[in-house]
Length: 267
Image (cartoon, rainbow, N blue to C red; front, side):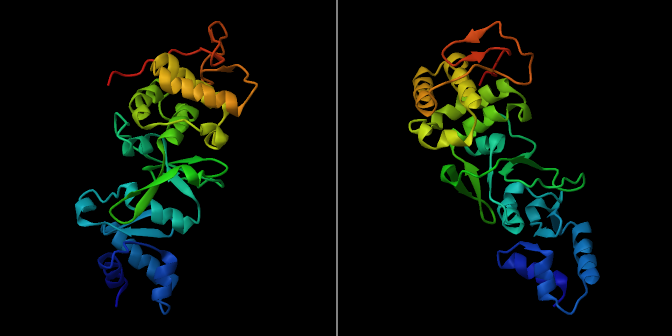
């Protein structure tokens, strides 16, 4: 059996993703250089994708024309290969919730440090974000073509969109997505554990957007109640850290200095 035959067999048996180490184990009599050359030829012929160093995926016929695999096809296997917990988050999670408004060009994945070394020639579809721990309790799973992926529940997605707003196009973009995502959120009990995975200013900013910008008074009241249960003393914060620190306009309920204008798109 040749390496190409072995790769085809993997694909036929529903295991299209594999590591260099697995090939080496299957061909103990072949040198690393021989294996690398064989795999490189399959990559150049667009029969294999190389999403990460030492990690390969067979490219099925429906993606063969462009030779590019959607990250959902392999991200679960990739993170298992890397030995790191993860979840699909931010705008990519919003897509799963039917709330992205526009499909993002990159696939957002949240994981833990240490950070991956980025390559200009590889992983250009993957956008990495990092946090100290992954809140497994607030993750869901969605079936994909090859496996399944973990993604953030609606409440965690909402918090992440606000906390990482500078990476998704700003608070106006976050508010646009939230206007649809709020149909799926339920913040009752968030003070028990969920809020510990974000920052207090993020909760304040989310509450302000839900209350003042999106005018969802019911959910805003829930967020406010849970926020005050979570923390007794709440300091003022700026609505956006990436804009001028102007204290002229302040919202007393959410204790935020309104230093940026938020204009969600019409849905």
